[in-house]
Image (spheres, helix red, strand yellow):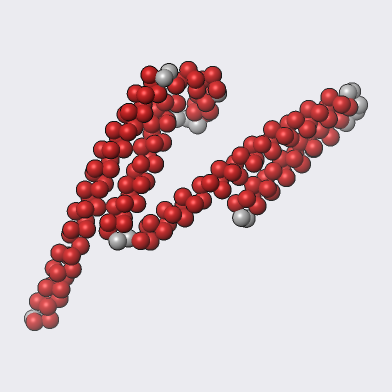
Length: 173
C-alpha cells in the first residue's frame, strides 16, 4: 500500500511540473491563432484595396490558383498562406515551451528543405522554357526538312531531362 501511495505521489508531482508548461503552450497557441487570423484579415483587406485579384489575373496567377482546384481568389490564397506560416511559427514556439525539441528539429529540417525545393522547381521550369526555345529554334532553322519536328521534340526532351537531373542534384539526390 505504501508503494502505491508513493507512486501516486510521484505521478502527481510530475503532473504538477508539466501543468505550467502546458498552460503556457496553450496560451501561446491561442494568442498565436488570434494574431495569425488578424494578420490574415489585414492582408486580405490590404490586397483587396490594392485590387490584387486584377493584378493576379493579368499575371496569370488567377489561372494557376484555379488549376489547383482551390475555391478561393488569389488575395485570400495569399492571406491563408501567411496564416499558416504564422501558425507554423506559433506551433514551434508552443513546442519549445513544452520542451519538445524533437518537433523543433523536425520543423527545422522541413524549413531547410524549402529553399532547395524552390530552386529545384525553378530549374525545372527554366529547363522547360529553354527546351521549348530550343525546339522552336530547330523547327525555324530547318524549315520543311523531313523529320525535323521529331528531332526538335527530342531536343526539347533532352533539355528538360538535363534540367530534371540538375534539379535532383540541387536537392541532393
